[in-house]
Length: 474
Figure (cartoon, rainbow, N blue to C red):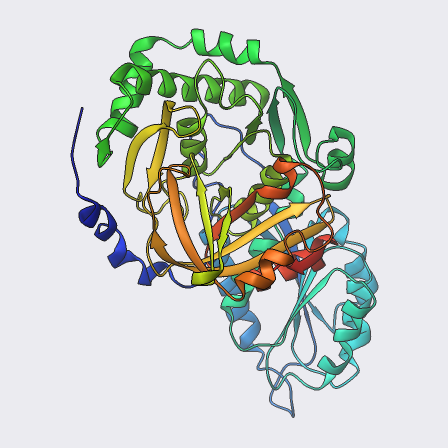
């Protein structure tokens, strides 16, 4: 099959959408994107508490505002689909000790600072001291108690502070509060062993630190699953999701695409059988098919498919998936200081980079570049798109930077999907690669994960909620 398209047409196909994607992304629903029959994670339970005076006196919030907050949270529940708000007490008259005793089955706490100079701080502080991931929302003119709040973070409390009039910040932080509890219910298939930092490759340490479970899968198991998929099902999958939607097909044959689609169906079968939400494989460039199309569609659907057994990247992509609702692109980056640029490329890429509900990006079906065999993707990234480049390493540190896509390239020396990002200081980032804390072989040092939007503040907040360091790599 051939559906020829010029480079000019291909570049222009998604350029119009670039401006729409240039900003940040609000949290999206994880459950809404989960197809029927696939494993899901349970909803996250967040206990809300209102603290402070209500009425018309100096620096107190109107009593009707509590009802407005509850209405907003009810709508937020619907938007996210995987969060439940409980509690809703007002202090006073409710007692702080009584409320603290009810927090045992909650995953997080959301506190609304209504009013108070210093008097409200001790009440809020007792709830912060309960030790659950906590957010404190404090609008302007809610009293002067805010002066005491920053000390909680300095003391190492897991509390995010929101001194703002922007209620949409609740959406962002509530989205982040999903990450830790949902990781505790996550199972990851690991084919032929993991790669990456020592901590991330240890099933015991991942379980202890994050609660996620690593499920070892042999190559033979993937081959048997592949053989169990009827060819007619693979044929329909290939036509429906890939062949009919591609802008062009260059090297692969029809049968090769069908074989790759069959591998996706086999991987889906294994994930459902094991109740898994993610998969990574150090055999992804071997048989029975290369994993490029499989991982692309998994990421399109709202799961995580990570190539080359990269456990650090798998965990990074899960964090963004649960917290923001978008997939990541594992990159083999190179620098070009002449353009102040970091160039990203690899052979597997989601086609719904803005989330499972977003429009698919234009793509060309090609071979995997290293071997010039199998099936891979050249996905067109939108010019002008702001991106975050990140990697959660050693189970304790997030390396992070931001950039903007300024060009799309098709250099035959690189992998199929390629895009150029303008960054803050390419020369400085080149010399600071790994920020002095990332060491190891090529696999460990090289990969970074690219996400649409600027999520720098969100990852800093997530670091507070989950207790990990955030280091700017740029």
